[in-house]
Image 1: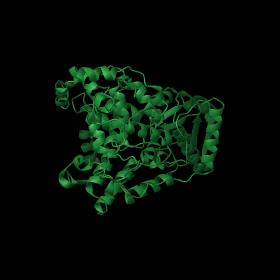
Image 2: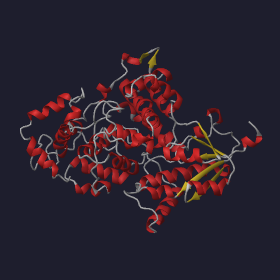
Image 3: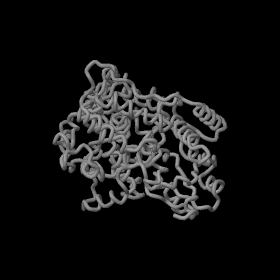
Image 4: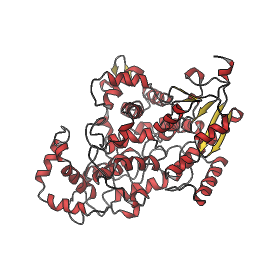
Amino acid sequence: MTDEESATPHWLFGDQLGPHFVDPARGGPRRDAPLLMIESRSVFRRRRFHRAKAHLVLSAMRHRAAELGDRVRYVKADTYRQGLREAVGDTPVTVHHPTSRAAEAFVRAHPSVRVLPARGFLVTHDEFRTWADGRGTKHLRQEDFYRWVRRTHDLLMEGDRPVGGRWNLDHDNRQPPPRGANGLGVPPPYRPRESDIDAEVRSDLDRWARDGDVEFVGGDGPRGFPATRREALAALRRFVEHRLATFGAYEDAVLAGDATMSHSLLSSSLNLGLLDPAECVERAEARWRSGDVPLNSAEGFVRQIAGWREFVWHVYWYLGAEYRTSNALGHHEGMPDWFTELSPDATGANCLSHVLGQVRDTGWTHHIPRLMILGSFALQRGWDPRAVTDWFHRSFVDGYDWVMVPNVVGMSQYADGGRMTTKPYTSGGAYIDRMSDFCGPCRYKPSVRVGEDACPFTAGYWNLLHRHRARFEHNARMTQAVRGLDRLRDLDELLEQERDRRD
């Protein structure tokens, strides 16, 4: 590399904040290369983000700039284009592959920007493409991918076999919450302390909102998620040492009084680039090998990161730009204001009200409330999957385009018709009743589908099956459920009821 190349500035996006994005040994810029960060106001104008998300992203960027000191030029601009022009003019810059299609299109179209390979994932784009192309089918399955990643990265393996003899320990990881418990009784997750930078961020956000320049939704209490590498490592350490052991069995359970259960709360740190996935799964495996956590907990956590997170990232890029517009079920209903405004008092369903309130206050809830309460409700009511995807993107602190397009279009809303999942992820109230403590105090009854006490999830489930019977009855995993429609003597009454339902 020439002296001129060594001086080429390197641009760090706001989700490329960890040391692995500036490590020359891992494909990053040279150690003497100047760094550039651009805080673009237009990002917050384009979407009405959750206030806590905007705070976290800006806090993380400004903290990273403070750490880098004189090596970085931090530019506050209206747009990325303006920021680049102000910072470097026509001088060439490098940047690691961005995490959204819009950002990728911008950097590849800019004549001065050279794009380096993506960082922050276990599998490269080329490796995934080779795996996916070699399958000879249009359907991609996370389970197959996960096993391939376990083999190629030697994760929880004994030779060529999975430790314990089984790849999948989901059966052990789907326990309902302990009966009568208000919580799991585990140590709470790591919580950071705010700094002067957080106060500055909050003041700026207040001013932008007051001036009418940017509009937010949700609350911005004390920052609840790491904004620095040091904080992210502390959160990882606390999880693997004090919470991982009880994670597996109850990872699908929900308790009203214990929002975090034993979940790691590391997704935002991973998605900001503060943590590398390899260090997360390696620490979890080490805790199992030392005998400190059971295998089902270690495997469940490894599956979330090396399986699902990696799979979602690559599906986003592999299936093309048109994937985000998929709408196999033809759902076009608009989302109601009470839902998009995060108004928990607008619904009488206790589970939905509680989860909306949690998202309003924190910008986070774990994967089962997202999938089986928020997402399931949207699916049953036929809301437009593009609007639902955008809502999840805006409303969650860990929400990014690459995260939410496959998770919502493919998994939650089944809008791709089964290209990445084998069935719609939705249920009646019985599942929520079994896996949570929401139903006891609720005005609705999970076993009732018609009348004043009818559970909106139970009635909505049957209504969805009826609406798409022709499609679902040919799905091997849905056939038995669809046949249940023939046993409903009150089906006509249920369908009429659901036409007029508002919550």
